[in-house]
Image (cartoon, rainbow over all chains, first blue to last red; front, side, top):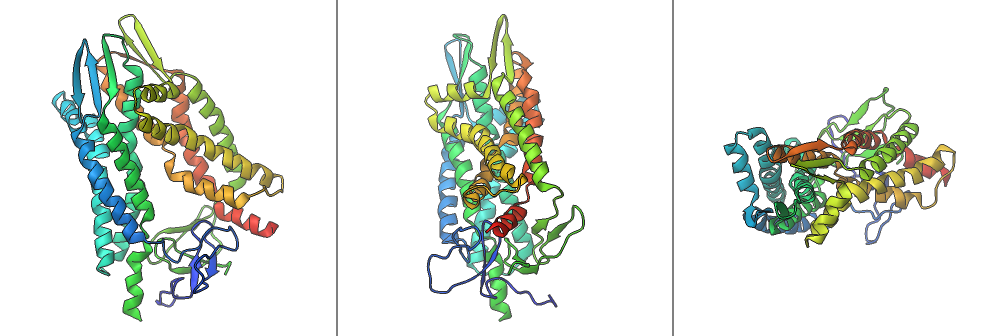
Length: 210
Length: 200
């Protein structure tokens, strides 16, 4: 490489998203397809920044009811008790089961928020054409891809509790409206991470070198 | 341009060089993994998919947890849990759980059988590109390993309330996670694309 970085875009090539074949970029034709696998070819993910912003903002909005509304409603001997995610965490801290409190807090509160903050930071830094620590920012992006799925833990816990705790008049557990918003947060953040194109982080490099 | 590859994270072009056994090539600029040497990819992936299918059937046929309060015992399978959510009016969540823990893993295994079995016998299945692309696209939505953590958290939550009885399929679930992970790790999609190209 002789210290000179050459990107596919600079060489007039497009890397296929699906099969990673390098294809000649045909300037002007809007609908290019990969000659090997037939997938649509895009130089960069289409409208990456606008799409990611839209999904991140949607997730931010969902995040509020997801944390404020109850995620489970326990009906025991005619009494109903609603629990939000945080009240569950607090309950476990108070009863001394802090490892489980930590797992729930990390997966359900911290990870979605961290993911949204990282994506916003990446979006802003790309829009400002920053060339600050590109390698670390790419790592941050990879992190958001990996951690997002773990937020689904709470949804699965609700599913299991609802199925198991079903003891007639004694006690039943219902899923609360918070669960729907929480699921929406997880799904929109996964789509947001997918729509962000990490190559945008590096595109500034070429402008500087040219 | 067959002998070159562009990094999917930073677009840098690299020449494709032969790798040592079990080696991996990483991007010199951003550190992303470009490609890996996967020995016996076809056979291994097929074996894991077959093992996964057996475990998957077991895991979904028997209850994975039971709860005992007094004389009452209630057991649950994954499907009954999803069904219960659906009845309670949480259809969206029920569908999300069904997709991530049942439909996506099952579809992944089916797609792999469809692709790999014919390739194993030297044939190329119809519409291979479409199936392989579909397989890659649904990959992020299979969340078996997250479900396992969900089981653990539920056990701890319920432990104070009642006696927990681990079901037979709990162990199948546990094994299934590792088999599914091994299955996606051993799949060499570059190899399949090359085979597809060679067949045309």
